[in-house]
Length: 563
Image (cartoon, rainbow, N blue to C red; front, side):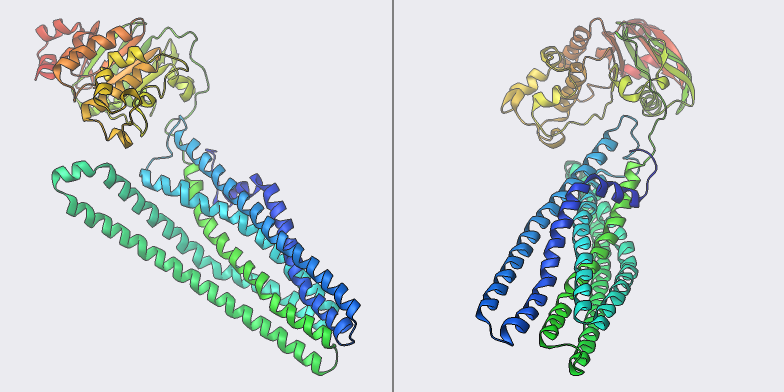
């Protein structure tokens, strides 16, 4: 759904996707409204035919009809509401799934400029609001049926009263739509502020340990208090707009019903209608505020849904970080990775080749340039100059998801998720693969022995139950267990002690035997286990040789890895 779209298009798709539920809910709810409109008419008939002229048999018969109508309207409301609510929940669910698919799409870009909390708010509250409109729509269709039925029945009792309702109801609906516009604007602002507050809260919770270590709790609380206060003020303004819209609609509806009652009273006094017709007219006049009020409610819900749908549309139609590419890698992949004349983020004309099955180290003296290289290899962005090839094919020709099935870039800040240790390690592993070699290579067996439950133990949100070094080992094991033909790993052992780092260096070599591996790192232990090392200094390739030779002969390399 990455194509450009509007909030109206999001609502249209949500409703179209639940057309059966909406149709069924509308039909049953319309039956309820028809029953409600028939009740005062039947009471008027009973007054005329069984009360004004007492007739016990007629009274019993008409009371039976009235009971049947009550049964119809009761079940119509019950099952209509059920169908409408089911459609609303399904529509919200489908929107959430669309948003998740867009956020997880290989081309990326949906999260740009949006903190995680804001995306969560869009996928929950905004999706709920748009889904809720499908329920409101079923009620709105039924309300229109109720108004029309009431008007028709009034026409049978009195043409002037029926015409009054037919002309007045559309005017009320138009006024309701106009009054809902300020609510739509303020509802959108409310959701923006709420999303921002959620994002700030998520960031603070994620960094709570760091904040405590810095003793910066006060500043964090002050920041969230200011953000929350802004969100609260936006919510209050939206509530005021909703209250004003609802109050004005109730006032207008009351004036309209008063006008109907006034005209009906004059007709009774003039003798144009009888006692039964009077009872029916009064009953219908009391019935009409219900469906007219529902129409006002539908207008308010539509205003909220449009504001939320616009935010959903922004995420769904967000441009990807990379464009183009539909091809598939060569299968079986040989695993040759070649960088030709790469120019990006400070890198200038970088040439680098990792041959099939080779174990290559890359040392970049500038961390920003290392990040630029990794982003290009992962195809989170395309380089300004040069190109990257996998088995002779430019990666820009490959579909991002297909590329990542052969080439995995495991960045230094890889995140873990709440679940068991085994689930984190095998998250990207081929079905049925044995993660044992990856667990041993990354020394995760030591992590399991220290964790309650071992490999089945839960590690908490973002691995909060683990130390920094343990989290790094689990992330490395996950990358190894993926068994990609080409694996690029960035600084996987910066928080690991020297003895464990040496074990991991040998473990990576053993686990990746026969597969291409690139280690972007300055760790002497990891670099010593590679076939050769490429040094990038000043944005260009400055040297290329085995680790021991570079340590002996190149002072820049020696300073980068030994100090």
